[in-house]
Image 1: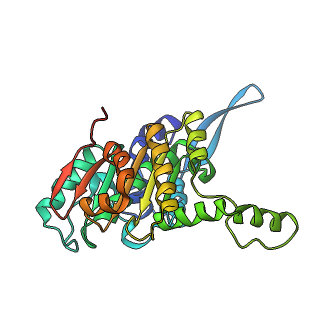
Image 2: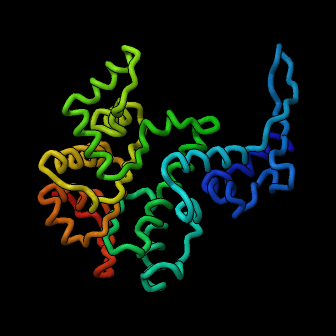
Length: 288
């Protein structure tokens, strides 16, 4: 197979990496014909001459991508299912018709902000994971065979509790303590750097990268004024940099407003709000 044929087939590979890795879809190049990694021919210039060089089938990226997702905490059913092919599930507690409506709205605007509110078992985490895989797959494809370092500069998936704990450690000096232990040859027991900070988000924007923040389990954090401010600081930075915020919570939207107080105005502006308790979907509020 020549390079031109491979490039034509790659369009299907771009948004379908997870399905290909899980054998839910065929690789457009090798069709998983039993060789696992096929070869194709690429013209390469060497010493002024054009020679044909064999390359591994691009579906190897799909398998590397699958390992990347596992490293980001996606396992089991959250690995399966591609956003474009997502359908209502019998395991979901939500009525299939309502499931279909929410899925269709997300599929129509996968790069917009989304905030999912509702009881466990209604599909919030499944949709959040599907959006994440959609973004991560696109970014993985952009960078040569998936550089997680490049991707992690502007794509973050983290629980609200972890975000707050890391911010607390950083603010109380445990970050510096851990670095000093490392530099002196000791074993550091604390995080070396918070996963995501306002500075990292602004740095991504400076590099012309779109920041994407996926905040999980917003209801499972013991809030203090400091922790509330830490969460607000991060998702405000993403919104200011015209990035994407996706979050989920077992609270209803009204309960979320009561819990997070005035800081919710940023989510109100940045996200489509899906309230499974009321069966409603509200678009982002237009800033005055």
